[in-house]
Length: 190
Image (cartoon, rainbow, N blue to C red; front, side, top):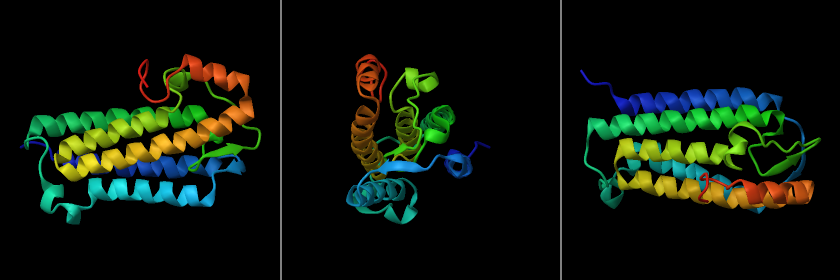
């Protein structure tokens, strides 16, 4: 009997959420945060992204069209991508430590982290979550999954632009040099 990769992908995301919530209890206080309207837009995008990926009621009409054939090999590949992406995001989260925030923010006594996954890409949490969503969409195989990935990527890209401005204001030339040396989301590419 073959494993049900869809169930295991759900378990991965639930475990990720539990780790994320536990780690969020130790963060520093915010000194500067993104504007409220921006936060509402970003929250709406990421909620919609996850609804498209995981809410079965959206599996109707064109959203249910398959972009890949149903295949256990593709489901296993999707599981592996989801696992690797979430592991990368968790690794990055722990390197960021108390400087992490669920919103674009600068913390009191904020420190610029450039080691570990932050030596590979400037926004490794977003990189990991994008790959995890791609894996989940591949295992799902439906068009709605790709739409969810696109919304997630739009969320992380626009949020990263706000963070970039905050970090440039906070760290000046040091952050500008880091931007020149390390790509934002995909090593050596973007």
